[in-house]
Structures are given as C-alpha cells and as structure tokens.
Length: 215
Image (tube, rainbow, N blue to C red; front, side, top):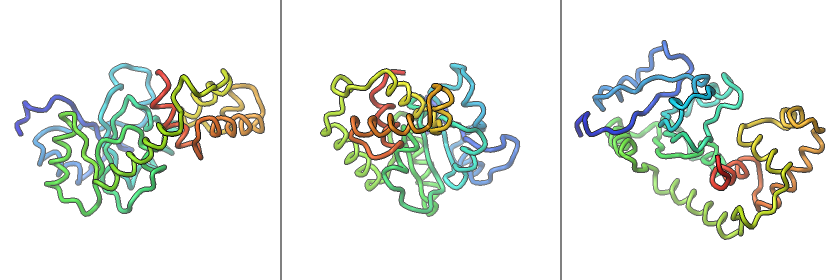
C-alpha cells in the first residue's frame, strides 16, 4: 500500500515526545509513514485539532500515562484506540476501558501482522482478534437486551450529572466536591444509576454513556 493511500493518521500516545521508542520506530519504517508522538496533556486541551485521533498505546505504559494526567480521556468516543504490546487476555471490563477500540496486538504478534492491521485501521476498518470481537459483541448484545435505550432509562438530572462525571473518570470524592454533595450521596446515586442501566460497575456505566449520551 502506497503512502498516498493513507487517509488518516495514527498518533503514538507516549509519556515523553522527546524519548526514543524503538518498537514504534520499527513500525514507522515498515509502514513508510510517520507516527507522530502525542502526550496525554495534549488530549486534555479543548482544541478541535485533538479530536477524532487514532491513538496507538503501548499496553505496558497505559497506567503510567493515566497517572501522568488524571482523567485521561482514553474512553472518549472521539478517539479511536489501538493497543499493542499486550501480554495477556483482557477481561471485557478492561476492553471497555479503552473505549472505541479499533485494534489490539499482542507481544508475540509479528511486525508484519501489526503493519497489516494498522493499514486497515487507517483506512477505516477494525483489527481485533476473534475472541476479543466476540467478547465485545456479547457485551453489547447484553446491553441491548437489557432494555437500556436512552428513551427507556429514567435517569434524574442529578444522575445524568454524575454519569457525565464518570465519563471524565472522576473519583467519588471529585464528584462530591464538584456537585457540592457528600461522598455517601454520590455512592447512593451510583447504586441507582447502575441498577437503572443494568450494569455492574463504573466501567460498564461509562461504556453505556459513551454509546447512548450525546456529546
């Protein structure tokens, strides 16, 4: 595939744009295109140029990236996410954490196979292992079968506020501070939200909100 065929750009999300990342350099050479580096704080800017990016993330570094900037919006549906260097099978909740997941590559995946997948993702396709695709399909079928369409779920205005805070990865204490309520009240609202959405935890609630609530 020639460079001219590429219609979108993949950005490598990293801790330090000035550092050297040999694996990413290898992928750039094999793709014959640049994979620009971007730091977490760049994604926090309210700037249209930072929306709708394809983010390439080293799984071994994702926790450090999240710690670098609190509320890192990886789950934002405006970002498509590609995970590489994955050394284990993820649970469904872990998969949902990465939001609009477009590609997933394990540590044992060859450079050639990664490049083939990246080419497809750049041109609008998904590149997920069959088991991962099955996990996500099973989850979303469950969501649909649970009658959780937005017009059916009766969320109060306060519950919607808290759900929005969850989308920003706010902690219970942060939600309480921002809404001027107690942490106990936040927990009470979360219980009701989870019950109404037929979800088990924050990650699933965020996934529901990303899919069903307008930006």
